[in-house]
Length: 342
Length: 229
Image 1 (cartoon, rainbow over the protein chains, first blue to last red):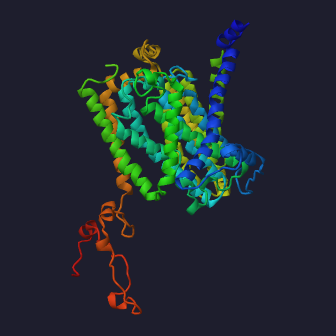
Image 2 (cartoon, each protein chain N blue to C red):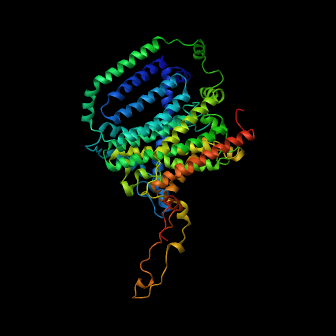
Image 3 (cartoon, rainbow over the protein chains, first blue to last red):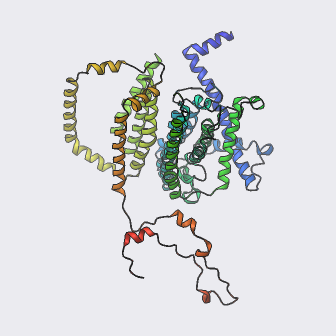
C-alpha cells in the first residue's frame, strides 16, 4: 500500500505535481508562521530597545497578538478609491506577496532539501528579488494619489540602484564557488564561511538587502513623516495585509540569501563533534533568525537616510567599492591558483 | 506532452500580449503587457534549455530596463483623445510603411539560404558534461573574447556620451561636500557668548548663528572673477 503511494508520487506525472504541492506547503506554511511571529518579534525587540513592554495582552506574553492582528485585518472593509485603476490596484499587493513566496522554491534548508535544485538558482533569486519593485510601482500608480506615486518613484529608483552593487557582490561570491547552484555555494563554504574572506562584501550585501526590502534606515518609499505611508497609503484591510506579509517574507528571504551566500547555510561553524550534533536546518534557521534580529536592531537604532544620501551611498560608495573588490578577488584567485574548476 | 502544452501556452500568451502592447489604449498598460511578453519569452527560453538566457532576460529586461520604462511612461501626462485622433490621421502612412516592411521581409526571407557551416552549428547543442551557463561562458569569454570586449567598449562610449550630454553646471544647484561637513568643528561654527542678566545679546555681536561654510574651491576656480577683496 505505502509502496504504491510512493511509486505514484515519484513516477506518475500527476503524482509528481501532488508531491511538489506538498513540498511547497511544507516550506511555505512555516515561512508564513515565521512572518507572523517576525512581526511579533519586531515589536518585542524594539520595545526592549526602547525600554517599553511591547504587546503583552493577547495570550501569554502577547504571543497570540499576530493572530489577533490577522483576524482584525481580514474582517475589515476593503476600500478601493474611486479614482483608482481597479484591476491594477487589487493586483499589486497580490504580486508583491506571490513574488515573496515564489523565491522560496530554490532555497535549500539542508543538503538536498531544495524544492527546485536548479543550476542557475542564484540568478533565479536575483531575478525574483528584482521583480519585487513592480508590486510597489503598480500600487503607487494605480492608487492615483500623490503620496503613493512619490513613494513608488522613490522605491523604483532605490531598488534599481542597490541591485547593481548587489549584483557585483554575487559575482564575487560566484567567482569563489564556480557554480550558480545554491547547494554548491553552501558546499564550497565547508572549509571557511565566505563572510570571513569576503567580509566587506558581506557588509555591502547586508546593507543592500536592507535597501532592497525597503527597511529602515532606507524606508523612504513609505517615509511616514513626509509622504504619509508612501505607496500603500490608499490600501486597507487585507490588501494592506498582503503588502505587510510580503515585506516581512522578503526580509526572511533576504536573510536566507545572506545565510547561503556568506554564513555557510546549513553548515555548522566548525566541522567538529559538539557542533555537528545539531542538524543542518536548525543551524540554517538560527542564522536566519540572527540576521532578522539585526534587521530589527538596525531599525531601532538608525535614523532614516535623506534621499540624496541614499543615492550617494549606492552609486558613489558601494558600486565603486564592490567593483574594486571584485577585481581584487579575481586577481587573488588567479594569482594564488585558488580558482575552482581550474 | 507536458512540455508541448506549456510551449503552446507560453507562445500563445506571448503573441496575445505582444499584440496588446501595441493595441492597448493606456500606455502604462502597454508597458505592463510588454513585461508579461518578456516573461513568456523567458519561459520559452527555459523550455528550450537556455536557462541562463532566461534568467538574464528577466534580470536585465524585466528587472531593470522595463522598470525605467514604466517609470517614465507613468510620469507622462497623456491626453488619450488626442492620441486617438492622431491614430486616424496617420493610418494611411502607417499602413504604407508596414506594407513596405512586409514586402522587404518577404524578399529577404525568400532569398535566404543558410551557409552549410551555420547549419552544422545549429545542430550542435550544448556539449555533454557541461551545463548551459558554462557552455555560454566558454563561447563568450574564451572563443570570442575580443569581440565581446569590443562590444563592451562600444557600450562604454555610448554611456559616456549619454552622461556628457546631460552633464551641465547649473549655477542654482547646491552641492553637498561630505568632507567639508564632517570637518566642521564647534569652534568655527558657533560663537558662545555669556549674556549678562537683563542686557540681551546686542552687545556681544548680535544673534547666535552658525557661520556660513567656506565656499567650495571649485566655484572660485570656475567663476574666475572674484576681484572684490
